[in-house]
Length: 252
Image (cartoon, rainbow, N blue to C red; front, side):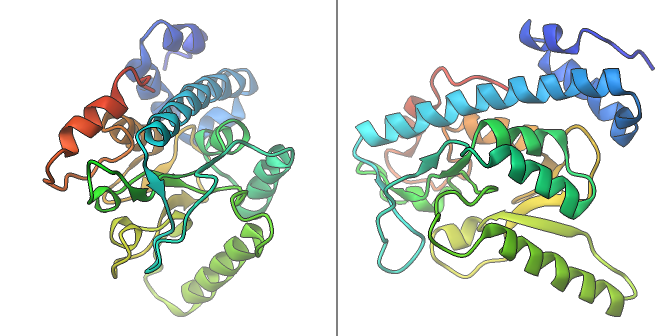
């Protein structure tokens, strides 16, 4: 296999799909080649910086449009900080994730260190059903709730519960690290399990479980291609809002 030491420069020149394809081919074995792993991580970091620009743009556009960011509860409790950049503890949290779950995808760690936590659930003044469109939520550091219970405690509990289930199940399933409510819970109705990352996973770009299971970068490209709201609702005004939100966002 061609080691392709120019992954980052090629990614920046627009050869993104080809670069991701080559990185996927390496699987977890890339971690045994330090020089290639470093180059791969640089691509993931570049992806995360582009994603951060997209998140900031979407949040700003929604705010200017009068969007009401709120919780997915009956009261629609207002959310004051729909986007929280990485805190000073972000690097340490990425290390904790690696230590706790063995191996985590490079793209996931890049998101923790360089993007932060985002919560786009809310209601648009020109699109009443926006909360039904599967708005982007990724909460890996848990920084939106500094005074609440630790997200590490939550992830520890999920991991321990899963391990207990595996001991009693002859056909164990995979562990999904929860980072977002599913599409239905986002609109405050009964749904399935949360969205998240399949772990452990030592690949460059891991599997993300959402409405479908795909790579994390593929999921993000789908989301940003729809301005942060990938699920169609068929509501009046939806497509105009999505086009305006998605305009000029960076492909990953």
